[in-house]
Image 1 (tube, one colour):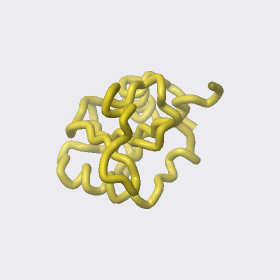
Image 2 (tube, helix red, strand yellow):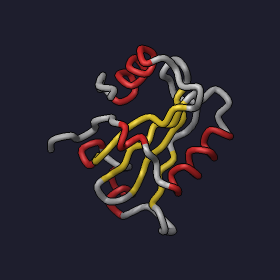
Image 3 (cartoon, helix red, strand yellow):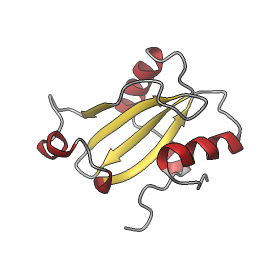
Image 4 (cartoon, one colour):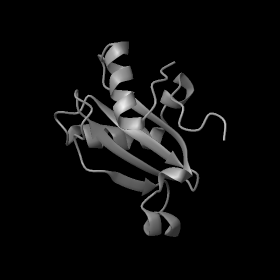
Length: 115
């Protein structure tokens, strides 16, 4: 799939419910400088805070908007990476330098493309 897992400015515009989740994750993660957002093709999302070294700064949260539970497929495979539609890091302001963002992005998401 073209564009799969690409980080771009469009993806960085988080949705309202995602923003609420991001704020909650950051509130409980004092070492977090950003939140990794992974959108799955089923509509579920995985999120976790990331530290300035690119290490996890929180546990992974998986949820689905307007649902009481995640989908059955995610229950089976925990949101397998093969089903990822989009992934990006939502940075806390002031965001790290572009160089540091690239470094962390590559470590966390396996991609060095930052637009």
